[in-house]
Length: 116
Length: 117
Image (cartoon, rainbow over all chains, first blue to last red; front, top):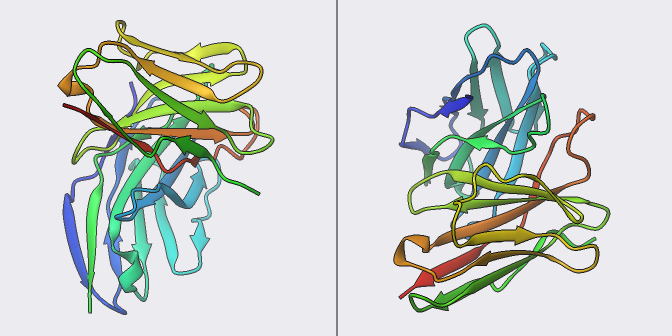
């Protein structure tokens, strides 16, 4: 069974600085998809960035980028130039590419606080 | 282009009552997923549906919980005889396809917070 582990329950960063959130996963599949979701206090789940395992290039979306290490099964999220609006829970999620499974498997989340 | 709609946003039920949660997927999406989020936890998959079909209900409790996605109308998650442990946020997500494309993104609704008193 696939699992997703986020080892940092809480993190904080000063505004305008850079922070990296960790995520590791376990799977026997060769192709799969990885995501980072943001959940602000409104509780709305917002997709931040996605990575396809067969692509070696790390995904980037504006201030958000990932460090995808397939061999190590690691998928960390880097937030550059942190803003107060980045304060939220961040969830790492995995989706396999086999069978009829369509569900996302989530980690327990990292609570990020951006301080002024 | 409306996103995923869920209603109600908040639902209070007494123990033993039934809870009905509704989800309208994004326009053009035919796949719906339900997740449950307990306090201080990540989302846990419950069930995956296409129109008139349950594809995967491996995350759904065997008793009291059921889900449907009829040909017309929203998807419904029904919880019968609710207990305090059912108190949680229930999220619905939709996607255009279940597999076969590189784009596996799921778009989430705002969730329904169920409180059982």
